[in-house]
Image (tube, rainbow, N blue to C red; front, side, top):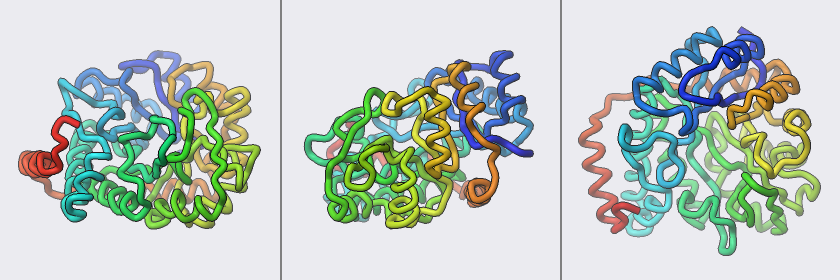
Amino acid sequence: MSTRAFITGISGLELSAAEREFIRSERPWGFILFKRNVETPAQVTQLVAELRATIGDPEAPILIDQEGGRVQRLGPPNWPLYPPGAVFGALYDIDPALGLAAARLSARLIADDLSQLGITVDCLPLADVPVEGADAVIGNRAYGTEPGKVAAIARAVADGLEQGGILPVLKHIPGHGRATADTHFKLPEVDTPRNELERTDFAAFQPLADLPMAMTAHVVFSALDPAHPATTSATIIAQVIRGVIGFQGLLMSDDVSMNALAGSIAERTSAIVTAGCDMVLHCNGKLDEMLEVAGATPELSGKALERARRALASRKPPQPFDRQAAWAQLDALIDRAGMKGA
């Protein structure tokens, strides 16, 4: 079945008649869930099944942002709280092997939660490398401030997700750590020289270039393209993301409705596609905007289609897993880091 090159959110706990019609007529490639779409395990499972039935594809990708810490769409009382990325960084500083083990365990537990609901893609791990003075939007979501450490922990997280049958999405490529503003509200500009970006920000993504999917950063890197954020910069996508970093997987935008981007939703969508992103992400569930995105998005074809197929084909069945033993081990590791409840 042919689809358009966009991923869409929806407005509530179940599909409206208008949303069903939209999905059938506009054929998004996939769907993304947020807290507004989540109530109970049974309800989420039903919603996931309804989305796939409406699009007519039992394998349609269902995405979610389930990082831990401040960013997790599934939470108490029906799902556990998971530690933020900084906890794994702190444990890594005590003992790298234990830090990596904790990161992998946490991701494997998250994968178990998601797979039980039919969700197949998690927008995780982060390879952003924050610097002093940057906006707190990344903050303790990051694994550290040294590229090698960040890449190692991000790899462990990706491994944990993949062991649980969940596809990871690497973000926010080529780096959100230096941003001095929250891209939900305004466009940040980074003036760091290219050689420094390559030594730090881009270096954290390079060891992860084989991951199946990645999400762009709505950040201007003036040394590379002073006029466009990475998401809409053909220069950055070709020269940095596909070039210096070497990422060859499916490249999706961050949310097209964020205020960091300029122009109408349709204009933003066209700019994202023209720059070289394979997939446009729209998150807020507003039907008028969803229609604009669909109207400006092409059929998924060519290299973008190849990358999408390759990404989905890389998902493996969950490996055997003892959830209770994994939680006990993770709790013991976090206690050792002295960050229980962080």
